[in-house]
Length: 371
Image 1: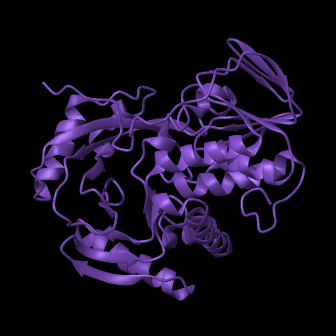
Image 2 (image 1 turned 90 degrees about the vertical axis):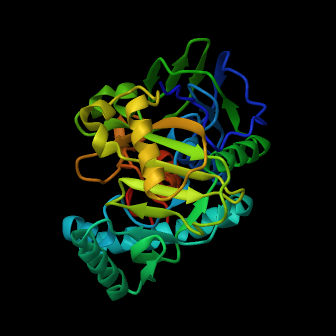
């Protein structure tokens, strides 16, 4: 019987943490959720000269922001050619350009946690290989960098402007920077009530003039009015002991259902197979399951990797029927961002900044979603 562990491979045990919210605070804005998107919003609000308080139900990046595969991928959840077909050429192109610029910005902000190695999309079937070619042609037609690829991982396309990162370390770095810049950040402070002028937790309140809910997994639980528009799924992962260098860049395979990256210390972080889990993976439980963990071990074996598994964990992420994220004012004075459909590292950071401007009643220059 497998005994799943809940600690992601990114955890180094060095985080000192922030206090719980106690008592009543008054500020301009409150950000609910201290993952990548919430911290991007906090950072942008500080840059705009605003006072901000941030709260999280757990520690910084305790959700998907610190428990994902560490991929930085340009574009939407849908591949570029699919996004063009479903959402229009102009919009898909603007999103792709904005997310490329966002990856550049993230690399400047936290260069120590980001590796500019590109990414691979690898086909697991002839049908998918044909789709990779359509993907490649659409990107090239609009002047985006992409190359046909054939190598040890298989056939597909190389996206040289994508990147890999340590997502937990990035969030913790941003949180420390925000605190040093004047933000008041609180952990282990689950939100009980939200309105446009107050956020209440078990031991405290934040009175403010606007709220941003920056939560991905479980967004519909925190804001029930979004039920039916966003749905939470569990993504499971594992990591091995170090293996010899073999995967120089992150790999996205089988339409994105399988993915892995080898870390600088040689450990291999691998996840996916959500489609095999069926309805059981649409859940608010973040506990890894023996059945899917065994399937992930089978994927390791198929890759020729025989190192022992040293970490098992899962993350909750929000999916939308359209593949477009939630980004709107859902209650008077309460804005929400989330539902990134599995690709929130870049989109979340971008939307966090756009939402910060929206809270201030302004449009961020070059905004794509909150224009």
